[in-house]
Image 1 (cartoon, helix red, strand yellow):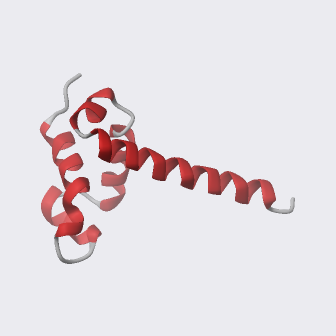
Image 2 (image 1 turned 90 degrees about the horizontal axis):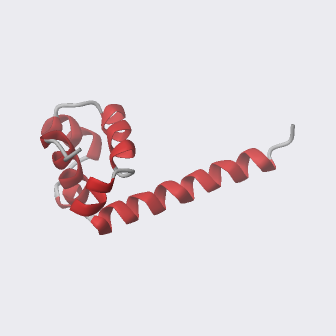
Length: 83
């Protein structure tokens, strides 16, 4: 399924948001008209699609790597916690 306008806007925003002044959460609301929580849900699903990979492979690879590192850190914390 091809990317829709919202999907493209999310990928474009994620790739360029650092260029804008202000907090990311404020920019998400102002530019995309959605809550930050919804944005991150959509972005998380989006980076698993072939279409997103084709549109911006470097961004998707970076975001997947960040997600994987965070997941591994969570697993390590849970495995290391006394129980």
